Every structure is written in structure tokens, then in C-alpha cells.
Length: 305
Image 1 (cartoon, one colour):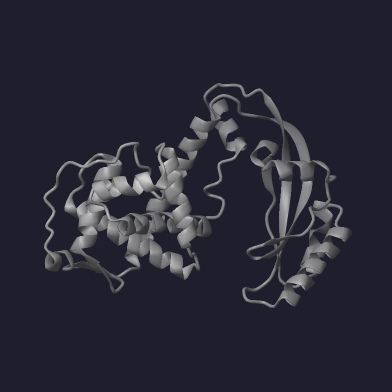
Image 2 (image 1 turned 90 degrees about the vertical axis):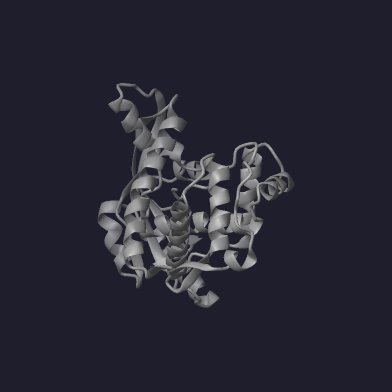
């Protein structure tokens, strides 16, 4: 399965199954992944989950490989400091319930009726959430489908987009604040970012100004269409002249300012936006996911019992 969230259909139900309920058998070790065990109970639960969510009963080996993949994914998440909180898992679970037109309690009851332990289901969900963040960290930008991408597909299909939009050329500058730094460091970096913003007036000429400050990451120019941006950001950059910067903003890596290097009128998609966007995202995830997962599996110690 891909890193996309599991989505339950409105009715979660399973045909009667002949899983072995013997406790000793359920706890027998099926495999080790980097020293972490996968038990027969894990395989039983994953089989139930897959059957409930795909309407197709997987083979035992398919269930085992899913569990192996989850162990590999979560180990990489730990390496990259990706931490999916319990509240994030609960929010995703609530979103599934809403997609199925039911409440959280109803979905939990349906899982129980299907013989699925809620902890096992949320463990799978946690791995999926962590994996999306892992992929984004390992391949930043790969999973952002913008209007420009959709417009290109529409044109390839011979369709002519008609909605007008603004195309911005932007450049990000990040004043790095190491993790765990005291508040004084963040405040100093904020002042330095404000200082650069006051001096900056031209993307081509003034990039060198940023390099005069210590530990500043200067990213390559990127193109954004206005309809890809949140309304608040659209409103902000509309008022910023070309060559000027947005106000400093705290981000995970430190403090960020964004230079608006130029803008021009373009077109955005109209009718087929959602369908094309979803397909582009799906294709990117599936392609990138397989490459990354294959590599991580080769780096892991996987022992089948």
C-alpha cells in the first residue's frame, strides 16, 4: 500500500474467519526487523485490517511484508526526528470516521465487530502518517502539486484553462536556529532577518547580502501560482513590491524571509483540477515511495522465522 491514509468504507464488515485464537501461537515470532519482533498476532490483525479496507483477503506473506515495511518506515522516521503524536493519530482517525459518515465511537465499534484491535489499527495509521513526513523530508517538494503542474497537464490534453492568476517567482532565505537553542538566539536571528529585509531591493543583485550573515540558507528561486497559496499569504504578497521581502516568520529550521522576485499574469485550471491534482499526487507518491522503501529495506536487517 502507499503512504496514503487508510480509508474505511461506510460499512466495515468481515466474513467469518478462522484465525487461530491460541494465545501461545498468537505471540510466536514470525520475523525480526532490525531486532524488533513481528508476532503471529500482529499478522492476524494486519490481515483483518487489510481485508476490511481493501475488501480483498491478503495472503499471509502480504500481511507480513506490510508489517515489515511499517517497521522499516518507523525506524527511518526515528532517524529523521519525525514524531507522530497520539493526538495527530486521533485526528486522522476522526477524519476517517467523518469520511465514512459516522462518529469516532461508531467506527471504533465497527472495527471491534470486525475483530480488529483499535491499537493495531492506530499503529498502522501512525506508520502511514510518519511515512508521509519521511518522504517529504527525504524528497522535499516532490509531493506538492501546484496549479502550474495541473495547467501543464490540461494543456497536454489540449484543454485551455481560462481562469486568470498571478505567477510569482520567489526565493526563500532561512536564518538557521539550531534545535534546542535558547530564546536569545531566535531573537537575534529574527533581528538579522529584519536587517536583511530592510536592505534587500533586488533578487539578482542583493542575494550576496544574505551570504554576509552567518548560517543563512539561500534556496533556489521557485515559481508559485497565486491560487496555490493560502488566502492570507496571497493577500500579503500582493502588497509586497517586486524585489522586496515578506516579514520574518519562525519556521522549523529557524527564521524565514521570502523575496518576491517578480510576477506575471498566467492562467489556472478550472474544471478538472481535483481529478488531475489527485492523480499527479498519487503517481508521485507511488513512484517515490517504492524507490525509497526499497533502499531502506536493503539497509535493514530482516529475518524471517
